[in-house]
Amino acid sequence: MGSCTKAKLTESREPIDHTLAKPTASSPLQEKRTYLKASFVKGGASIAEGIVKDGTFRSALIKAMESFDAEDPIIRFSDILKTPSLRGSVNTAAIEKCVAAFSDLEGKDWEPAIRLHRPAKQVNVVALQSGVPTDVFAIDEGWPEGTQPEVQGWQEVNGELWPIDDFWITEDFVEAHPVWVFELTPPVDQQDIGLTQPPSQSCLWSWEPSFAGQIQRIRIKQRKEHWLGASEIHISRLTTWNQAPASVVVNGTEHWPIGKPNKYKEKVNGRDIYHCVYDAEGNPLTRYRRVHIGDLRNLNFDLIKSWRPQTGSEKDLFTFATCLQQYCVIRGNRMFYVIFEHDVWPARRNKAKIIPTTGPAMEIEYRSWESSYSEGWIEYVHPSNPATPTNIKGFTVSNGDIDFNTAIKL
Image (cartoon, rainbow, N blue to C red; front, side):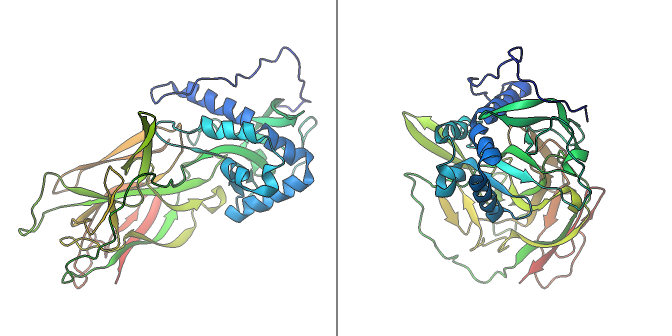
């Protein structure tokens, strides 16, 4: 950590450009990070001012943040605008502009948020050095683990956010001091507007046994998140055929993604049109703070709620590109998966190409700065048949990054 001197706000400091054009998917990474930082500097200033100068606002903000996550308090800007005890104390126009700044980035509406990073373990808190304010702010621009060992510290000055001269936040600093972090969070669920959903229907067959396939326990052994954040562990999975029964008609390389779809939005003739796809974001499994890396957790996460290869599931949904939901169509006797540490925009999209010993290969995209924790395939097994290392009754993974096992639940 560099020496800490009193911040000097002089005319020689370069102004921060708050009018940057919204980057595209093909824009350089540094341009995306510059846009992210400028948007937070402008949109987060009145929140920072309230934290520093208004005790009532500060208390109400922390209470609202803890209602979302008591261990690692966080609140989205959009929720600040919806909370009466908070909305009246901030510059709503600036916050609304910040929310809009992160909408429709690569087809998604990312959510700006502020998180109160608290030291995860009891430490002897080191006194702040001269010139460093009690409330230190940081902007998470998105970095791979093992990079960016020092992050610029920010402070509130006269209702604005300014860098603290010659002060850089390090991992050692956040282990001993709270830091207010401005960061992006994944898109929240949006309501389908003007789209119809077919009525719920029951599966027509009952002869095929059904069970829930679960990840029973999990241990994350390797940190794959920059030290300023926590590891968000996600999974993407889909079913397909290893070898389809003779009674099943296969149309090309059939596969059925499992889990919550992500919506892309585009304007066509002035109207918002949604496209639903299972893409690089995956679905959340669990969240690990740095201090919890290495802990074994009972997860009992449903990989699939009702695995019936031939007749389909009455509990899992397959969502078509038109955002219509259809029941009883998730089939197949092989499940491909990727478990990864999820990072938000502007993190890159990686592609896992999984090649089984028999049957077709599969490619799955996942958004992360890092390689995956585990990727592979799991075979279906009839509930009365024995467990094997490849089927969901006996599937276990243990490598340098992760331990987990699967089981069935009737």
